[in-house]
Image 1 (spheres, rainbow, N blue to C red):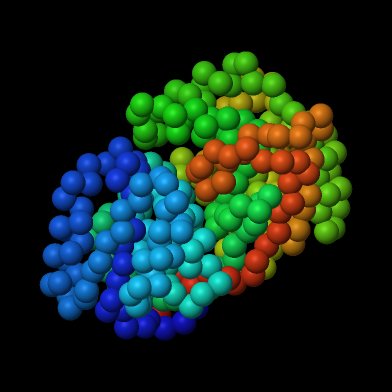
Image 2: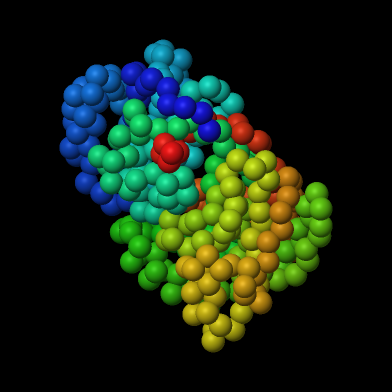
Length: 302
């Protein structure tokens, strides 16, 4: 972590549909806030079509001190992949359904408090992941949660209640796959309910899939939940919400720099990367890119 830097020229990347939150007045609120504190704000609106390329073009035409992702984990992923490998700083205004990355970083969930990071902050360097060539800064997975995320993204409504409803419906008929996971240190072979490639620790639902991990340690974890009987479901869920992932007989973690994940009998599989569903080609190569992103975090307590 480094000391605060002076941030005057700011770009805010707005996702108009994240989190089922009314954002009609958001741009004016941010602009007024920045003007009142001697900052200059510009805005970029995502459309879902070529957003990364358009954002790179916008950054090439103007000089900024920081770029803020205003949305959920998908918006954070978009901005982070454009800034990764550069010296530009990423800020986060958590306005999505889950905001798992912001929670891992300790960023306030209230808009006015998150905006205060513009002048009261630390600057940290964090790792990023490449998963089958796709950029990830937080969490990605295969299996049950990827299926739920796909259904969630196509749902007419968002929010935690929608996620729980979809998860309950899909659990009844879900069939786990068999995986072969080779890392730089070990081999796993067997069935799994879900497999998470974790740079971060917490899903937006507050499930802690990777307790005790760090975003800047140069490694990532593969968190495996084995198939389980329905009678064990509540106990596993309790352990996930109480940061006790490793205590279950159905869970294990592989710590690594790289991994290749094969889903036995499948060439194309459904995955989710930072909250966005994707079709991935097996074997899925995953590797860490150490300290490749600069990001605003709350100031370190004295």
